[in-house]
Image 1 (cartoon, rainbow, N blue to C red):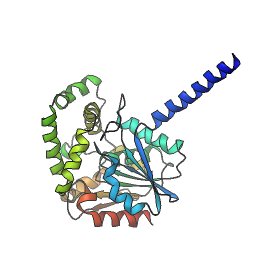
Image 2: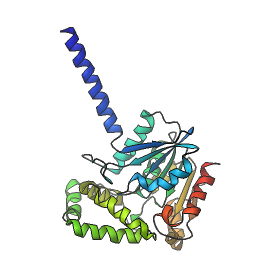
Image 3: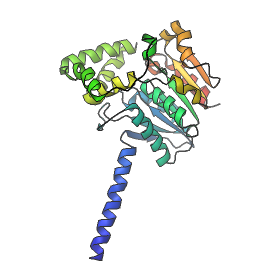
Image 4: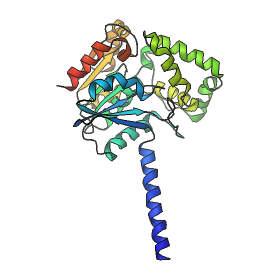
Length: 282
């Protein structure tokens, strides 16, 4: 009887440990490299961690890279209630649980937003951040009067109904149109479309509307670590509006790519990787 109780108790401990790990790491993680300094790379909306492959090839010799793919995106298992705030907490918990000492965060698009949010809420957790083509509030660029507000589940359901109701072929066409608008590298189109098609549609819809409602402009003042922001070339045309969102913080350095679109790592590779190397090596 005593042995049975011990076995049941041990099973409970194991299951609780697995549950805790599952919550903390609902995103997928790939670790590459053995350098002392850790770098966590966070991809953007509906993207695989493979978006960082070329970047990691340049970093792996001197850094330990943790490449994430967020839950429900690009074939990764989805979770019940994805949200921008919950993903922020999960990444912070991952850093704590894995005892990763002062990592550098590199985030693209929504991943850049997550890096900004982590740095603004966890002041002592990270060494520095690199934000690749993300703004504190993208929606405000198109709607200057935008104000973030709490959106009910019913509103999310109604807003996402059109997206969720798309047939596979219509969704594929939309994903292809999106890919063409986000990179000048036509060889990447099929890959971007594949990531969208293998993303969980519920997660896709929920996170699209959730992230559209994010406004980190008030939080920027709380970021005290060095921050490099790499922006796509078209943003240079509205530089004063873009830079106003970052509040002229002295620890922020904003640089604009000389060519290309949203996927700067594809469209202006040499400039992009040189900017990152100069920043993280100083």
